[in-house]
Amino acid sequence: MPTLKLLRDGSSPILRTVAIWTVATAVVVCCRQTLAQQPKPATEESKTESKEPKAESADKPAAPPAAAKPKGFQQLAVDDSQRKMRLPVMQMLRARKFESGRVSSTGEEQFDGYYKRYALPRWTQKKNHTLLPALRKELRNDLLTGKSGPPHDRLNALSLDYLGKMSRANLHPVVRFNAMLMIGDLNARQPTGRNEPGVALPEALPALLETLEDEKQIEAVKVAALIGIIRHARLEITNEQSRNQMIGAMLKLATAKSAPGRSSAGHAWMRCQAIEALAALGTIGSQGTVVKTLVGIIAEPGTPLSLRCTAAWAIGQLKYQSAGGLDLKTMVTQLGTLAADICAAEFKRLEEEIPRAVPKRGSRYPRAMGTMGGGMDMMGGEFGMGMGMGSGARNTKTVPLEKLLKASRRSLMARLDDVVTGFQAITRIAAGSPQEALVTELQKKLEEVLTFLEDSDLDEDEESLVDLLKEEHTELRALLANDSKAKKSSPKKASDG
Image (cartoon, rainbow, N blue to C red; front, side, top):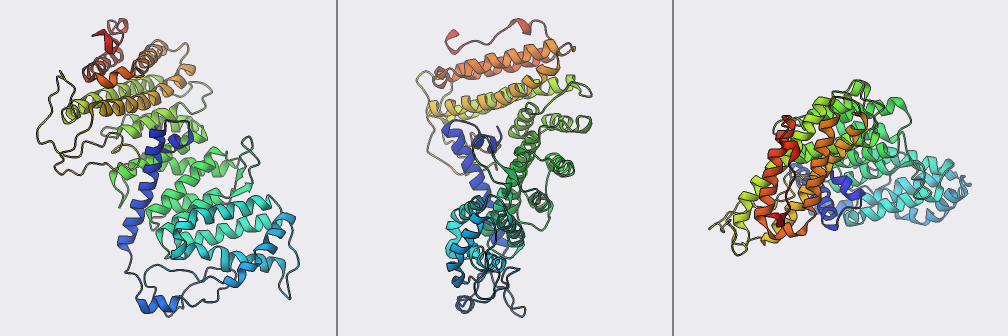
């Protein structure tokens, strides 16, 4: 199940916690990798010099003198005298027009000075790093106050330009990450309620796409850009050219097997987010390009199950007019194969992990002696950035069997539900086709398995869960091979023996 989908949908608290932890970990890891490549922090002498406020022009972020070489991360100068201008600026936003400025300055100059010399430079100050979410919220509230009109539009343009420069400057990664997040949050029309989510700022999309494909950009900022791209896709893109550009960029990322300087697990996570953006757009693509890409990802050998499941889920989110131009046979076969692979991977993992857990009396899986660590990666590895909890060192701690089986059961339900979502979409376009019967049979089989997995008694009976998965794996393979005998079988409950 896609990480951002877990945050969006009404998932269980445990899965939502996993999703939140995953995104947070991704950003922290990206920031740490960037920090390791940066020059050492400035000396005490340079720190003392930086405390003195420096004048900054109204049209670009402050920068150190040209002759001085930057040491460590920059912190832009903040003109605290501009703080008093907040009230006049808010009045301009509410009035939706610029008032005459004090003395000789115009309203526009006052407006720009407040944001360029005070409000936005504050983001770069080390003491404000933990306050960045609040500073983003403050800027969003300012835009909500304006709603529309010249001051609102000017603030949008100013923010897009200034934050874009911040995302590329020699600033701390957490500052650059938050700057790009804010760019993704900019709206041309502000939301007015749950039924009117607003319209994302069209001018921000090119900046987000360019950031994602910028080889010189750090990973943390690319993650933020991808979050913004998904938001634009969900809020609907009316410009056909921009829409096509996004589809092309997301297909490129989704099909890329690797990326320079990025771990395989981290790249799989990025591919998952690209797939979610395609799902949010809802189009099958010219001549079914998007569908073919998703089916191809499901069929990729050695690809993490989380990525394959995300592709299956995305197939169910697309808007199909008909089956014209689509290879239904391949779609059905690959979805069915994925379901069988999910069952096989899980029962093999359980056979390895159960001996390390605290056994129940009479278990056929005796506790292994001197087990090694690394067996706690039940949902990680393939979820999100793949940050496993195991260290590989000797570990005397054990996992209660019930906890292990409960996590396994929930993970299975999430992954198989993604496959069912894909089948539900195919069902709508497979009517009257040669694949209709097989689609119906496979979907029925998976829904039965999901029903049995809802039985919490399986958390106390490892034999039944493992046996169930082995049986379903065999029967799914048989169905795909068009075995008529397999069509008459059905899964057994844990209490059936």
